[in-house]
Image 1 (cartoon, helix red, strand yellow):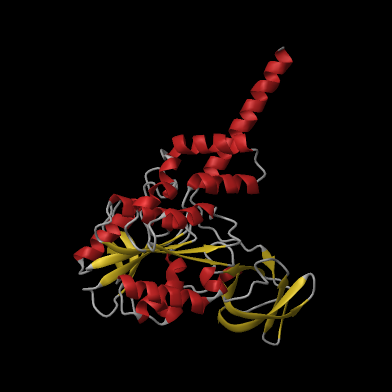
Image 2 (cartoon, rainbow, N blue to C red; image 1 turned 120 degrees about the vertical axis):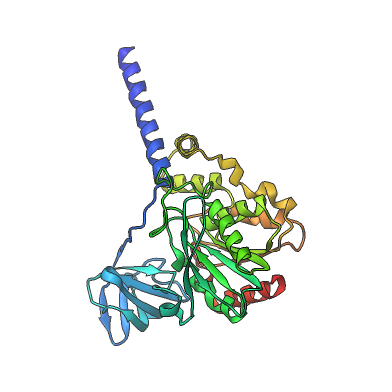
Length: 363
């Protein structure tokens, strides 16, 4: 009996420890860069990379490597079962070298709107509950118009919003790309923890107030990944000034997404369930509140929704359900190939055409 009791205690401690660790991963603030690939060869305007799902995808991508290197990649031109050879369109930073640690970057661009895209902008701050928050403001044709507010995803930064900027700018709309709590250069939350949008949505509301105070006649909220969860929460609290919503690979249900991440780590379902309970108590979140499917029938704001078939980060089934159960014509759902937030990369022209049409309708 003593042995059985000891085993039971050890098992409970192990399961509890795994649950605590997984909950910590979900709420961790981490802005470090990872370089999982090694450049195999560089020659004649091409680069050879290990054959991985991300290195052989069609579309527009950047290759980044340690110490700030960055190159725009073209199509796959050759390869074998172990390697992919891609054309190098340009090298914007650093020098491509064989053996360097590298990664595929679906954000494509880096720097600021001027250095990355040639677009004029202003570094501004908007008031928030935690203090001044930094943002990029692309002025547009006039401040007295509909503003687009770009909200990046978890542990990302404002650079995630670059891919939408040319389209927004082409329509003459101002765009405010915001940082929020725990971002690099932004005020930290009291516990230095990521709250999965449960507190961060307040910055979206603050950004809307800033836009309104500076001439905006309405806003379009544009969220990537967790930014989508933040946008939807802000919309539910006050839809009055929101003309439209754009969601790119959004978290539409944290329970489903955490289940997906638990499966990817080969956790038994009961361990994942425990981890979610620990997470709720640890950061004070009610995960059920982030199941947007519950609110779809009441949606009254036009929404453009992008999902990707191979999303390894976010469970996109809830997004399909959300689009299907919203009032007819309220959600324009575009399902593409690609991984998380890669709908633009797979087909930039199609993505931008859909975005342009939507913004022209709701502006």
